[in-house]
Image (tube, helix red, strand yellow):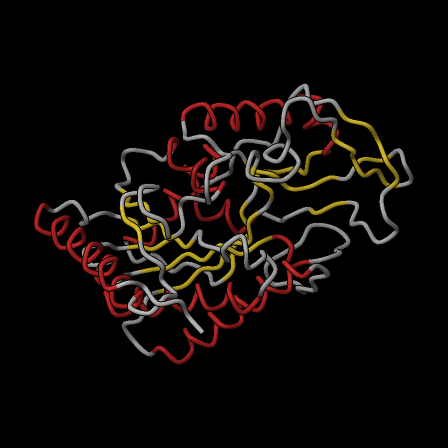
Length: 318
């Protein structure tokens, strides 16, 4: 059952929404749901000022506005908060205690976002999915190819996509457009770089004990620019696809990233079912916004550190 949002919390949040509305502060281009996690805290300091944004968090004091969209009373607060906006980007995931792989929570958050956006008359909703939906692929993973997740997280994100597709099919004319962004690893929001702490040595999985894993990555600042361009397209009524891969190309090696970051590491034999490479085909994205900068380990690390130094402490609450 959903948690109950206290009457005082609802009153306080409603008051802040009304005050912002009266001052014209909530008439922004884009509303970011769930911006207090690692990804949101990296994006916020590098978000381009040409695209006005409001940032949301579940807990008070961590963003421009706070409420729990899944708690009792959350739907009313959510649709009110979205008034005056054009686009919603859903960064929210399950609370830490719930676990990142709970598919029902990912789907519930996505549906809450879609329903609130529909009531508020938004143009478009971007839902954060993941490259994990592809599972083990030979060659670049394309949006129109098979999605065969192997991890709980991949299954959860694919279930979210399917729930969003059902909602859009039944929403009727005038409903917001929907795009699920199948995001590659974001430098600094990942466990490899973002999870490292000084004094620790990373034990890095290697295929056969010698071959590093390779993944499609994107830097926080590059991602911010990419999202801003997609938001602008959505605001103009552009016909955006339901699924879109988001990453820089080509895939980079995990060992190369650690070396570029001067992070100490030691190799260890990867499990037999480890996925050697995740390579997102980004042709569809390039056709929409132009090519992104090529992926380079040193540039990705610099992008991450620039965003991290500009933003809040990433050890804080999510």
